[in-house]
Picture (cartoon, helix red, strand yellow):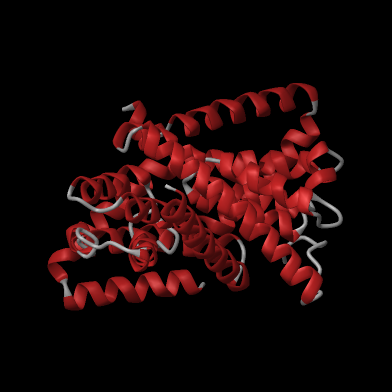
Length: 168
Length: 167
């Protein structure tokens, strides 16, 4: 509901303060909707399959149950391989989370998706070159593992907050 | 027309084909499960359709109103460790779509920015862009949005520092 309210107020503000930009913003919005309509629909359906198949599957053994460093690494790796568009990947991750992936693995997947996002490799190679793109993936993956491990040890071991349940 | 409908990202095309085959298999081999998956998907679509549309319009408004040249101008001749943090910050508000943000970053690189600054912008690219935040809020909650954003920034900074000191 917050997002809908924010969008309504944002566009009311644009119409009031920058009416010349309003038409452009709306046109871009419709263009994005047209571009993402099918991918988002497909992702929701794919997420539903993943969610219903995950229980009892191999993933749940690594990503579900008790939160471990291995699960964090697996979650981060899986997240980094998902399509980078959040409207496509978030339904998949949400589906896995609802299928009893623990919260550490879910956070690791979100982190891998945001920080590594190997799906950007095509744009990276085409625009920046393979060396820069290779460095991006390598260093972001290394940093993600460092941050994930720090988060796990700091929050679970020192703050004693459990990651074993799915995100609420 | 195919790109208009299915987009231009090959990974998305793979996802579309994989999903179609998955449902085809399920409808033949496990029809009850297939119906359950489809029903669940339709419920998700019903629950999230309007928030997703709202999120897309918020993201498009930001994309239309913020000039990428202004952002690139601040990093053109920066150098030093502080530039890594600045690069992450500026990259974070660039559009999350790599086909939009990567050309901007490539432009800054060719204008003379250091590799560490460019890498920092890449690591930070789209971290705090509205579509990511709205997705966090739509599919999860404010706590997840906060944790994800904080850890992503930390990851980008550490990655930038690794590049700065190693390369």
